[in-house]
Length: 231
Image 1 (tube, rainbow, N blue to C red):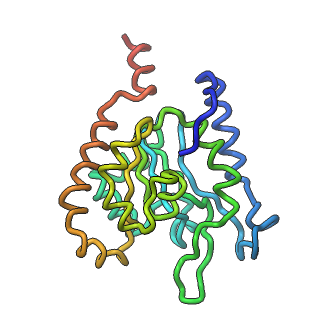
Image 2 (cartoon, one colour):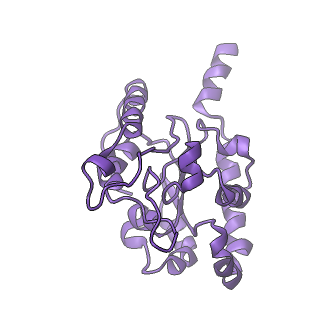
């Protein structure tokens, strides 16, 4: 992850995060000033962030179902990701605890074979560094897929997704504030990959579930504020 600049005070950071999120939701760069062919449909940026979430899920880009719903991971991949993390839907969609920041905020469209195109090239250079500068409280990043690996891990990303995920122990040991865990995509198309790599379910998933549970067990800033008000 790129180095963070000096962090603003919490109150100004909260206002700044709200303003930046509003800008992202209103973004139309991929349609109006594209890097290549314009997005073939109306943009609908999808993300969930807060100033208190300490877990961040970094996916690839919304699919057709998420484009329609406006809510990330409202599809079978989301069901599998929640099972991998060991959380229910209510916890998963609690933005005060879990942020969701895909590499591309809008559904990029389909290729000629009917598969999803890669994340748009405009998103990450325009928004990503300044957005994560507003999220200094993130302690655990689940980097899902090779696009997330490359951006968040930089030189630590290996040449292939399999090599990167296989090296998860070295990557976890080398990252902190936040700790970054490389993941494959939870698409059911990856069933064969999971079967070929049984260590993923036997070794990596137990670590991730424990790390997620530990973060969720910490009182959030919202909880601490409520405690002070009722104490």
